[in-house]
Image 1 (cartoon, rainbow, N blue to C red):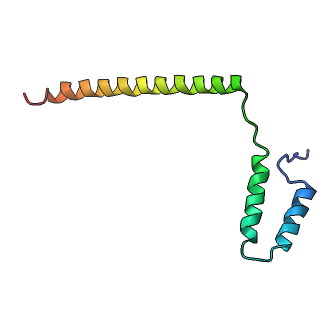
Image 2 (image 1 turned 135 degrees about the vertical axis):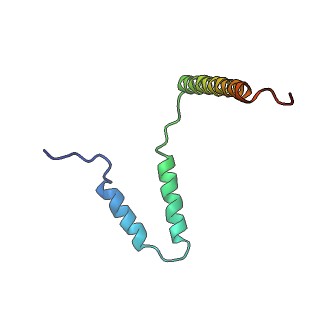
Image 3 (image 1 turned 90 degrees about the vertical axis):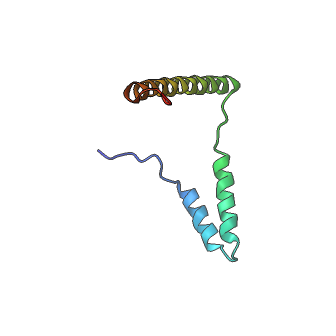
Length: 91
């Protein structure tokens, strides 16, 4: 069974790239082509809705708070173990 490839560029994209490559005349043509491609990719970006943005922000904040609590707990545990093993400093 043949595998379907989804990410292959269409013929018009390939033809446009070849045309742009062939039309390269000056030293700045590569920069212009790069900027055109960047703008083309930025047009594909989909911004999240307000509800999605709040949801993503909430998930990130909960994860960060959880990780802070985990690191704090491990730090306290290791501090206690070091004091238990070596005694309190200055005594």
